[in-house]
Length: 534
Image (cartoon, rainbow, N blue to C red; front, top):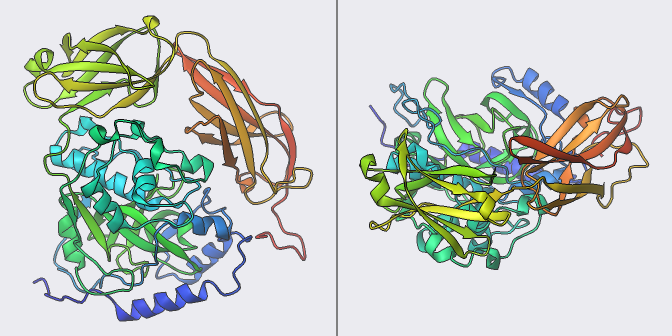
């Protein structure tokens, strides 16, 4: 029998969290690493009852304390948690929206990068999934703009944001497709201006009907909700949630996380995408890329003091979700020559040719072609287009019902019909002295020049003295000028070269360019009297 308890905050956990959070600022040194993975391994070994998870190195675990705290973009620390004893203990269920009836309803794991924009990413992850779930159309694959939501809603890389404000903005103003305002703050570390959104942002934005809070402890603790309430809500779709991140959490690699030690780094927002009664844990989708955790996901114990699940937001998309989607080209695809555009539509697929048209526009938003659906193949509406008659560069495309008014999200794609011409160079960022041995996570400023289209992605490569690539880091969000960091702990101490590698596809072949190689030395192993965290 489910117990009818209204108080869902553990006072003991609240007190412990407050003490830990307050003590985390004692002896604060922003230049030190946020965490030493060897310390976490030792803490796990000495806490056998909590040692059901394994740590691993990632780009997040090697950040300085200052940079790690910057990622925690929730405007407050979560100080309450759901009481794990207040639930229906007879249940034995699992919900995982990555695989519900063999269908993955989630979008790809994204990376907020060098900006405290976690709230926007948590909101977008939750909205994309709920849109797909509500419509029951897995092929929709909606892609919304966290940059627009964050910039126009009042968020800031240094100041962060709050989930209730994100939910309110989604209700009042809505959010456009990713192509309307691509994410740049992760690469630049700087806030973007709301004015950078596309000129037709209003017509391209989707509003939600509203939001509810299955649980709500608030920034200072409080009442409302239970584990059963959150589980019931999760059966309808993912939720936005918050947690206090401790330094051991950034090293999470696999298993069921439970805090074993380390300082509080700050409040963080994620998307809650499942639970397991057997594991007694929540499944979260983070915004630190696929390198972190279990491909970007983590199981967090109900007994953990982080407060995950103690405040949640469900998003009601109602009937606002689109019913038609462009399925080719994919977002940011590079296409050449004659290709078939394709779309999918809900309802009677025999009416494809009568219901759907494609609208192509230039980067400036001017419509250049409107094409009717011609054939139906494998449930896809298709029409041919010869890109050789188009100027090379960036375009947008959407599918639209001729008479119904249905309109898909806008997708961006590049037309390239000549071999790309590329050049790439880099210099150490301010404060990085390559004449001395490097440690930690040095950063480099990269200049990427490419015609007739931008490079598809850039890779920072580390080569040994024999010229073999021994470490690399990919950046798919290529800007003309951008900054990338590299974790030196991915290689043993010694002599190396760093170079930047750029790639652009054309007619089935990948064209590449490399910068000049920069000789460096790596030294991470502390000798007597040295502190490797500095």
